[in-house]
Length: 154
Image (tube, rainbow, N blue to C red; front, top):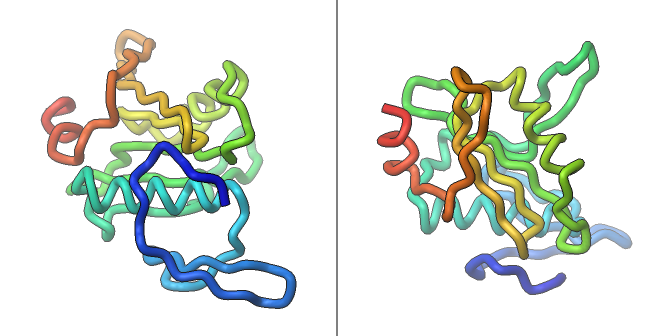
């Protein structure tokens, strides 16, 4: 798998037939190691190991309805009260981050309502603070830690 612009982490790989599998610490099972999953696992370990997001408040590939269609979010971090805090959209490192990709995460967030959005392909990272009242997004210089994110919306 490709080297990413995220800190390395200890991972466990296994094989199942032609598929490589990676152990997912949140779902507590092996999942197929796709290029997008490689990015998702790096982001999970970065959020929990470096930015202090509690594992128990992260959800992976959670389903939600949008325009009467079922969609899945890559990662959603929740605040202590259970409200969505950070919505993360992961793409494979080979997928460029374009306006259309950014539109995807903002569209999902219309039903989720997270005050922070993160879009990453593991090499480029874009994070925004959403102002629902003003209906705009403020680009952040870095991904906020869990305590910083909570303080910014307090």
